[in-house]
Length: 216
Image (cartoon, rainbow, N blue to C red; front, side, top):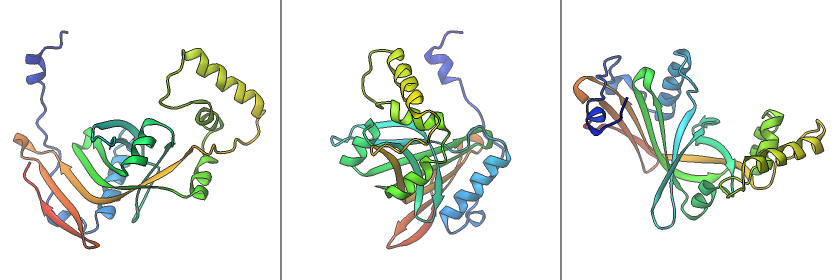
């Protein structure tokens, strides 16, 4: 198969699995997110906690990548990473981000915008010790986003750290930890026929969530 502009222009799907009315959406968007997340889990969506994290550098140039949601509550959405990575450096200069969840089996998206803060050291350490030992070693071994000479360099460093640990607990490196995205906007998107999608939007205004419908 050859990927051409014509092929891409004709590649489409008419969404028809569900509808979304204002009356169906909880007045608290965090509660509504948890309901949709539960639906995704029940539907056995592959890795429902996968989310796109978009950041921007000091010049306003956008950058995006996939990360995993590792916590959600009334304060916001949590993920963990290397603070010295590209995303970590961008968030230090510009502490704002956008998140997107896409669950194609349910024809749903959730779009989130907000400010970003580091989680405290204790919270990051509590999560770090729950990770598999290999993931702990990997977090120490990888100089994330930095140029390395080859794959062997990474694997050798991993094996060296694994040998030194000798099955003992790995300490969380100082440059690794969590962030929380504190939402100021959350949109729930439900695919509909003829591209007349349902979009229910929440904006945080003076500490309260204001719900409205957006045109698709």
